Length: 143
Image (cartoon, rainbow, N blue to C red; front, side, top):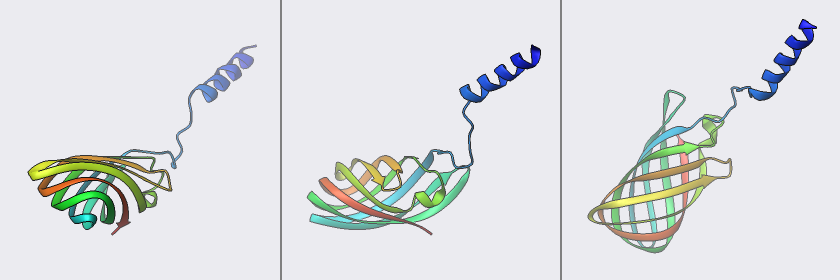
């Protein structure tokens, strides 16, 4: 009978404690600097670093926006990336809805998502003169 109890306890732990595979999702920390100029439609580019599972992965970012946008700015954003199963999931094309303003200095934020299920939520400071509420397509490529 004790082997039946032992087997029941092992089965209970197997059901209640999910196994963590090497492909399990882990959050990442993102820092990015983005320079942008716009009048209705805008373009910009920049660079950043993804910190994921204790390692730093530099990347490039470029993008286009369309909406109510005017001005030029430099934005430094920080935030979290979720839904990453492996580092290569982070690279790709993201769609976003964002907004913010700067008159010498201000704040901005953006929420990004790509087709691989990665979501990035960023907030930070802007320098320059820009007012924006737009839809954007942003491309991230690992260096």
